[in-house]
Length: 609
Image (cartoon, rainbow, N blue to C red):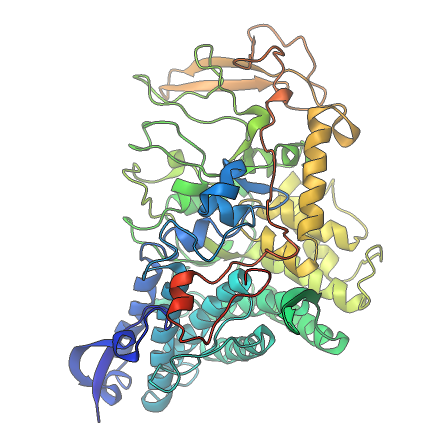
């Protein structure tokens, strides 16, 4: 029997010869039968999968921060330069090319890291199945379920970013290195089946040591991901067929019903387990996330586990800080902003609004503590130029942030998503024709209202029925900034339509028309001091409808630097959300480094030829 080999892969398509591809080095003298029959050794192999997720240009930054915008509610800052840079801004504005820069075209690119992680999953799945005697209730059964769950997540991410991709569900060898694309429907079928197997093998969260935290999957994770993938598989997909014709295709009516039933049943099982709950305070979800609280049984069900010195989730998506503050020694980039109109789309009594959308940023310390950009000396208000995303804040971390690698885990699945996925799946089952205005008051309505009750603090905004658009809007209000929206819009077939609607809404906000006719035209601020906590305080007036001039005593008007109009609504600078057509360019092109190493088995579609 051959000794166990540790395969170092570059996307399985990144080099021009098999010898370079299978750059192998002997990891140990143990053979596969020894490693995958021993729970401790096998678990060590599984840990190698997580190692890949912490690598530069993997989930650490590229995969976890740039690929989920622009949408109708979130956008990449400075998007308007994306048509010439061919970098992450180009990804956001749907105009990236195969020559994409910023380390997307070297050997350690996001595509390659995903396939490296998949290869490690394949090795573990094959080895444990052959030698480990995996069964529900034993360690090997859990480890097999873990590897199946992670592999399904990796393939799902490949599909939602690149569409049809090569599928390999066994370890790489010289006969299967250069594979063409596989129809994503076939990949969906495989990983949906894999997740059913995984959920049968794994215990619930907290039942064994491995599932005591949300940093490793359990039965609920497999079921929740299976529901999410089933909903994606049931929806619209951009396909390139018949000589390059690009078109949208949806599953057959019968298959769509099967997938909706899968999603409903999986969510029902999680709900019935009683293992998870909505956090009563919406902000607490993200305070815990920033403070690295990872215990099981809360709202967060699964997070990508970053070490304290890896991962740039807060750095890129957090509340921006222009310079160092008492909470962060470095600037917080805050490259993902919120559409200004979205602040006003919220009901002003919705407690999620002021957690999610923040109309200010931090300056540097100035000797005491950070201040907002609403100051008499700076005058660079955030304003209509883009609301900050506030779900992740350096001041909520348990330790001071010392570099871009903040160590905050991206939340992959939380209980609110389970409730809303149930409502959507049951709505679609009750309304198989997907009639947009069909009224629904089935079992999922109580879960829909449960999410709204948390948002408002009581049942005053509960509803007696919903239509499909209510579910779509509620998902926007609940998950803004969590990078779920783009795939939601794609599977609903609404990406370009909603982007165009968002641009029109920005014009309405700027010109005080339509739904935004009553938005106040002037913003005021008031700085104060909380001496007991040695922090500055900031009060704002003029953001909520009804807060008209003049402001109460003690407030100062926000002047827009360099503007003849002191009002803030003229600061609109989101000139475009897309350059490429989102109906054709909603998927990423395969990078040149991958194409060059594919031996002609891969090519780009969707207008990238």
